[in-house]
Length: 503
Image (cartoon, rainbow, N blue to C red):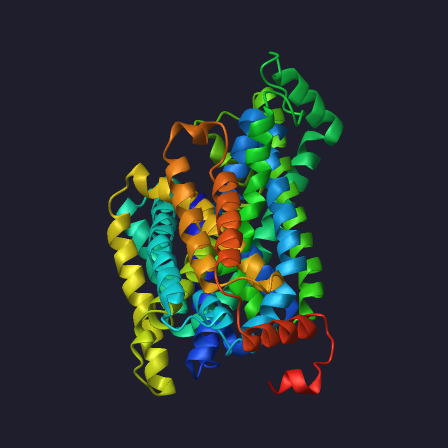
């Protein structure tokens, strides 16, 4: 059989596995809480791998190795910032968010948590936050479909439209029926596949080249000018450039498709184990991606690699080093990175549409009707995203970069203040959310973004405005403060005081 036939077999096997997992999740889904949050039954390992896989997307397997291949370790600062941000998120946000979302009227979405936490009688905060999630994640999902179509076009020679429909169709199928559990369980399988690929490729390449010494010699031979030093973290870097790269970590606090995994944990105490598993996965996969880029430089120096597109270094090395069937599984790992992100964002978008917008009309529905409405939400978002993806413009891809900064700036300060500052008010939260998003957007569309990543001014401005407006508006009432204290105690593993627990 030809190499492409072997690779196609591997891809088809991967698709069948994902659909089977989605069907198993479908059998476990009975109401909207199951469909949107898995009934808060996630083990720490499942939550950690799911959060990692839904977070990283194709950037980890293609973008980061390509950047390291071109410019060296100076491009690793983003990975360092993301790892620090993820650790802080698991340490400080996960346990309190798990406890507080249950205490605050069993909130199953981020916008509903803001609403219930701050007792917004007009539900304005929830509606605005839900609209923000829906709009930006629709474009985010669209960008993933673009990536999937491009992947099939470049790897198998399919048309862009065919690739887009295949990726969108399979992802939609297991997400539509399996809901949150379907997205989460497939994320776990995809996360393990990404881990295996990012360990196997650099290890086999090191063996093939004769060890790190040979790789280092090859890199030094390739660095013939002072402008490029692949083994330096600071060559060609500026202070603001490093700050901008590390600041990507700030975005974690406000990413709905990531922090929703914290809300789905079995208990707040599971966050500790989840943090250890999640950060270990992140460190190993990030190191694998960085090493792949550096090893690619050594291959190029030896005349064994000539790339038109640096972002394909991971894929090309896999095809050089492994049997076509195994190489096909590595290609499946790239698809896994793309599809895990799409599925997670579809669920969060659907929850924003159903839980935070439609149900605000006050209409009561049966469990079955709510689940069907959730599935309709997934379908609507996927269809709109697919229509946008038919136009392969740079504007859509630009919005992905803004979405990370936008969510981080709009929601990040609110998540932290909601969990750790009892004085936050609904007007402070609403003002901070709007200002953070607007500053991130305007900064990102100006020339200032070339010197400092927009999440820095966006996050800081949102934080400051939320605090100032909260101090200028009436204090929260006693019931809100009692709820805050109950959530704090539950997150710390303390037994709530009897009078507080019944308040």
